[in-house]
Image 1 (tube, rainbow, N blue to C red):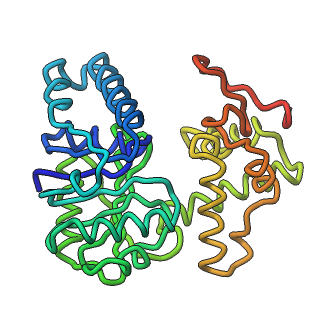
Image 2: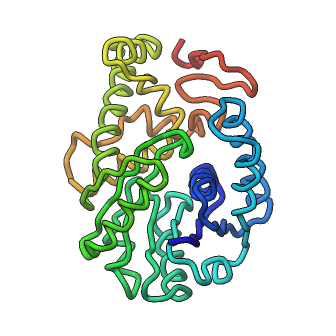
Length: 295
């Protein structure tokens, strides 16, 4: 694989494009909106500058990385002659199914179609294509240039050769691949989201405050970030969506989203991206301040 396409120029898409381009791949970054593509290139440039400042890469490497990137607003043009497509669009089932129908139409039979979904069934996505054996999950962690894990998810029909190909590719990117099977939440979110949900329930029931819950997990369990701060970082709407996938998929009450989480999402308090969640976020400030609602 030398030429790949990344669908979606948001946080995950530009991170994935960054990593592939940095490792010498020709990358086609595809998004329907040109401003999103321009913003993605600017973000990649800033992140490369951070790597230069930390002496992870050289200025020459930055230029090589940027030269490996091309942007497209047309999906059919962007995926032409690529060996791999990594879809990183919004975590919305209908949207992903629509994209994969289009990818099936505009890519050859040997092209591998990967999705960065954190919770949506790979088998369901693969079923809308004519080549389910070539469809696989390639779940990167945020921020992509920093985080080592790639959770590789086999759909029901994913070919073993494709799994091996994507595993080898992940290693080539300097990542650590972990292969799992396609059940609700896979492994990362099947374990993480109930923990976050339980932390929210603990706050909701008055067991402890925001700071106390996060401090216990950071200092007692050696987590780099407490579960409530992590939920804000992920996005409370994303957490709710994944919990609903788990709850619907397993039909088990233990996955039912906490009512406090539901209310916060309904109110538009989504965490970092909205400026308020369990903490309040001010542009340019790194100080962690508990939201007035919980102080």
